[in-house]
Image (cartoon, rainbow, N blue to C red; front, top):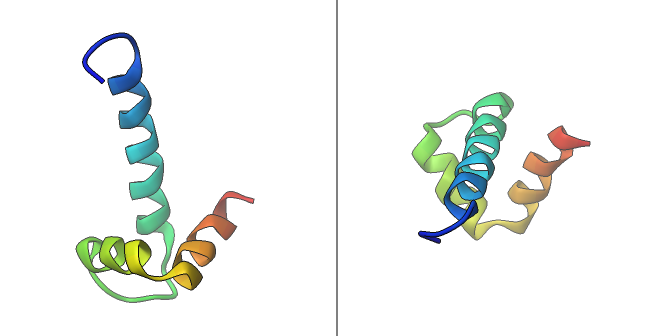
Length: 53
């Protein structure tokens, strides 16, 4: 991850994920809570990915 464009690519993915969490307004809670929920719940992760479609 230290060479090439890997760090840049991961930063872009991280920004996309943070924007999806921020745009998810139906579920109230902090970004930290939403990140934990997305890591543990397949249903919530699917809900987040619906914004991209």
